[in-house]
Length: 292
Image (cartoon, rainbow, N blue to C red; front, top):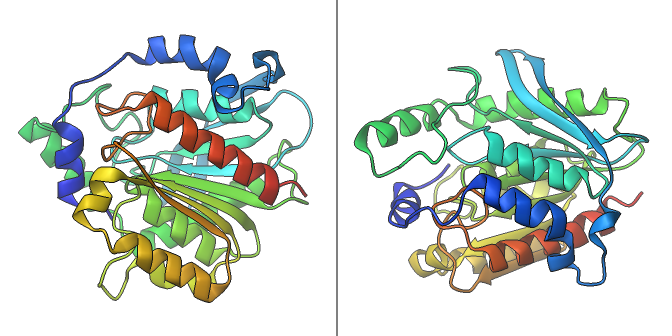
């Protein structure tokens, strides 16, 4: 679901800022950066809590956050290999402030509850790399399908979720293929999907995620790291052709100057300006596709 080379690129760069610094900077002003005409005061009050979800494989831990009142479109978030952690809870809260009921899950719940990595874990450390890849390798197409159905069912059962509207889903790195599995397995519920530096979305393997596109009905945003595009320049063209053949709207863009992993706020290669651009494009997609 994600190539070792992607993580090597991620690991070569130092941590640029702390999660606390980011939160102070973006939770107050992030929407203004993405949309200059939007006042920061437009962010709505939210409620968030840790939750558990029964699946056929066990009990998954997750974080669910939503506007304090009303019903809203649901969004399922698939984190990167570092798993469910404070940075993703902060990002989910930011999305909820824009009017969405957001579930971010621990993809490795079969093995251990979150956190599954230390904050600002160093992928260059051999022990850390070995542990994270061992977790990564516990997941496959079958586990993804089980999880997709359980997590979407949970969202649709929440009073804060407006089931008259389509759901959105978004994923980072190894979460990219999981977004494709989500959109393909529950096509009538998923109306919008976004991937950020998704790993291995278009390969020559028989289980390549892009082969799932004919089963989907969602509109897509695919934000590609420049470093990933350099390594595999044909992937974006394969994706564009597949979406065009399926007649599905898809915004597929290489974000200039970015390294694999540039979007999570605690990433070693976090790129604030390009991450804000990608976040803004996601809000546009969700606003259009999940409006009702």
